Amino acid sequence: MAERRAFAQKISRTVAAEVRKQIAGQYGGSPQLFKNINVGATTTNTVPLTEAVEPVDFEEYLITHPPLVESGPLRDLIEFPPDDIEVIHTPRECRTVAQAVPEEGDTDTHVRDCVRSYTEDWAIVNRKYHKLGTGFNPNTLDKQKERQKGLPKQVFEADEMPDNSSYQDEQDDLKRRSMSIDDTPRGSWACSIFDLKNSLPDALLPHLLDRAANEEIDRHNEEHRKAHRHREVFALHPALDEEEPIERHCVPEVPKEHLGQRLLVKCLSLKFEIEIEPIFASLALYDVKEKKKISENFFFDLNSEQTKGMLRPHTQTAAISTLARSAIFSITYPSQDVFLVIKLEKVLQQGDIGECAEPYMVFKESDAAKNKEKLDKLRGQSEQFCQRLGRYRMPFAWTAIHLMNIVNSAGSLERDTELEMSLSERKGSWSERRNSNIMGRRSLERTTSGDESCSLTGFRPATLTITNFFKQEGDRLSDEDLYKFLADMRRPSSVLRRLRPITAQLKLDISPAPENPHYCLTPDLQQVKPYPDSRVRPTREILEFPPRDVYVPNTKYRYRKTVRLFPIFLFSICIC
Image 1 (tube, rainbow, N blue to C red):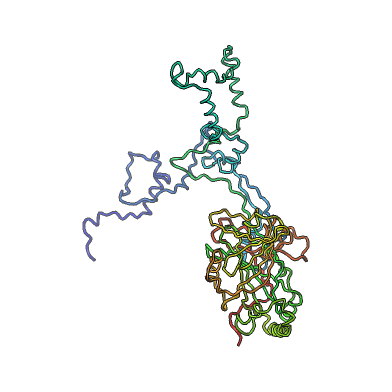
Image 2: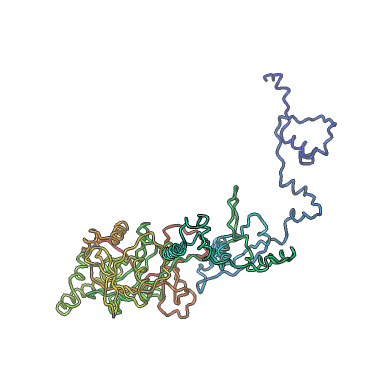
């Protein structure tokens, strides 16, 4: 074994655990308490100063050594008030007839607790002494506006702009009544004799020279100051800029479901020049500027009962929710770039899309008797395709409505307003025409700018008649192509001129949605209060896809049911 060197033999071998035990035994668990230490005493086992000592547990020390609070006037500032926190349970508001949560089955306990958090009552924690803290800010913006209600507006002479005509008349009158400045005794305008004679004396101050006690004057002035005095006069002054601002917390409101500006769209009728097969339609909102789809699709069926009979082998018993022809769209960020896009589909059939749409562009309703044999042949072919491929769909046509253009136009017209929308000479710009028994039909060309404020709550309801659709070009209309077409609709463009129109007539009724609509279904197909009769044709709320974030808590459990208007299978292939 190798011999140890001399300096290594002098190194202490005391481990850290033994050092901690020595410190805990001598100082009572805290190296801060030096009162129990006998400075003059010597111990045989000394602790080297080079050894690291574990720090004291501060929380444990406070528990074992509670502070001695002496009774006095400032004792309440040291102790925590026991009645500061108050917990109140408030029932949760529910818009629907029943809670939209899944049934409790053999699910996990954690999952059941998460689902129960959407139905339990709100636990509101109130702090009675929160207003006495430095983090409380009573001067919120809403309270500041509420305080300013009813206050008279102060108008100063410097803020008033004199009327040019009256000001000029006064100057002319003064010139007529005044002499020249050189003709006055002292040669100044202020000492003009005629000005002094024509000036009116000031009103005399009553009791100006009367003797009164100082106490009486102070009391009289105090009464005048208190008369019509605002209760919080100093709170009306805006807060000063703080050098070191701190975060001030306000009492939050009870969370509730977020709803944007709501728009009600009723689908009234859909007619073509010829009626040979069922046509299905859908509505959706698109934002051209954000290049996003901001709502889900709303499918509706306006076919007659005779036309629906062509699909009877492929249709089952339809649920009441699939019969909706009215939809409520929610728009959180309304803008001048929002379009209502309408897409039409038909039963998949053999041939190209152009060949399938050719009869709708060639035959007219007035020539039905002349082309009866051809129409019967096309109707027979459609019945065969409906029996074989009634479960499949193919794109047929589409069109779009500039939403804010309609809102602005309807806001300036009467209540019973009809707007006919068509493609004016296929230039891509919308022309709006108003039907009136007195004035007749006149064009209301309108342009909108993105800087204007958008509101969907104050316009008058309007009935739209859309008379033209664009034929579907290609097997599929991509979102990129759709955004280009929508941007070109706001200005004359050669891109839309290449699209072939299909004559049709679609009537829509657009109006602000009522606050509590009857017979309404949520996007989860839950009945909204009030819902008196479950057999009435409902109105669907369409789920919104906001283009930007909405900073509100998710207080509603979204439980989607798999219910379809009809079996939909979109295919972009052609059968040969």
